[in-house]
Every structure is written in C-alpha cells, then in structure tokens.
Length: 225
Image (cartoon, rainbow, N blue to C red):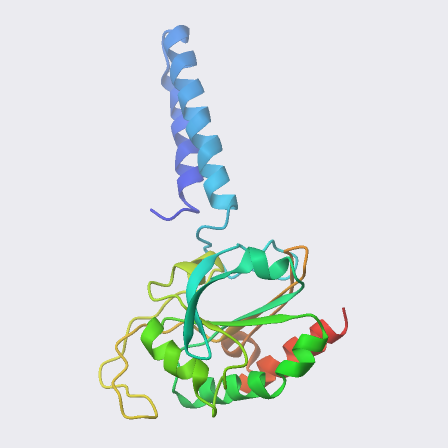
C-alpha cells in the first residue's frame, strides 16, 4: 500500500463501521479511533514524505537534509537552512561521471557566479554514494568545487518530490570505466523560492530538454525574481 492509498483505505474503514456498527456506544468508540488514524494519515501524506506524482509549480517543496560534498569535503546539506538565505535550485540527475550529468554539472559550475549574484543556492542530488561525490564535487572538469552535490542513495529525497529511483543496470559503466552499481533518478530540476514554494519545474523526460537546458532555464527564473 502506498502513502497516497492509505487515507482512502481509512475512509473505507470508517464507512464500513458506520454501516455495520451496533450498538451505538461501540460504534462511537471505533469511529473516534478511525477518525484519529485518518487525520494522522492525511498529515503524513501532506507532509511530502512520499508523493505519487511529481511535484509541480506552486507546491510546497519538502525540506530535507542529506550527506553532501563541496570541493571534496563532506558536510550535511540542509534545504531549510539554504532557503533562509534565498532561492534554491535542487537538480536531480542520474549519475556522476556520465555524459549528460557531467555536461550539466560543468554548466552549473560555469554559471555559478550568476546564480550567486541572484542570491541562489545550487544543490545537485543523485543516488551516487558520498565517496563518488567527493571526487565529482572537486573535479575541475565538472563541479569544480563551486557547488555541492548530495547523496540520495536510497531515493528517499527523490520520492518526496515524486520521482522514482530506477534500479541499477548491469554492465553500465561511467566515463572512467567504473561499473555503476547504484540506481538512477530521472533528470529533473526544481527551482524553489525563498518562501519554500516551487516556482519552476522541468524534466528531461517530460519536457524533452537537454541537460544544459536545465541550467539555463533555472538561471532565467532566478534572475527574474
């Protein structure tokens, strides 16, 4: 059962209790219990712990913390803390050291000063482990130590945003010839305003755009704030 299905299940339970409950005192007891469970389930669903569909413009961005690396140094990234400083670009990508993701990271690094001028934080998120990201974040050909990348190895953060972590593919290797054993998050970018609301979303799969288009579109949004 998914989180989105759970509230529906509780509604069905309440209806069954209403139909079959006798005597009334017992019904009242179980009705109150069911109602409390239903309320809690709605709270969990609305909290953004997991989403059945991808979040869209106007939705509240789920806050998260994650192990991350900047210029090869590990730290804990907090979206809440980043938003306190200004807008944040959260970009999900399939894997470090692969063609499109390398081009995207390089483009973000090249334009980092313009994002900074717009008061915007950049955070990349993938299912790579933190050891791979320590290298990737410091590599002068890619992140170049200019912005952090976070590890979402289990896909928990991706799920909060309605993205599905695809399983690893046997035999796939990165540009260094190393086999990729982690899952893949679809390339999707969320631009989040300082108020925590999503002000822009684009997906390579849905919008048919290139990895570098994500960078240019994100920059255009934050420059217009």
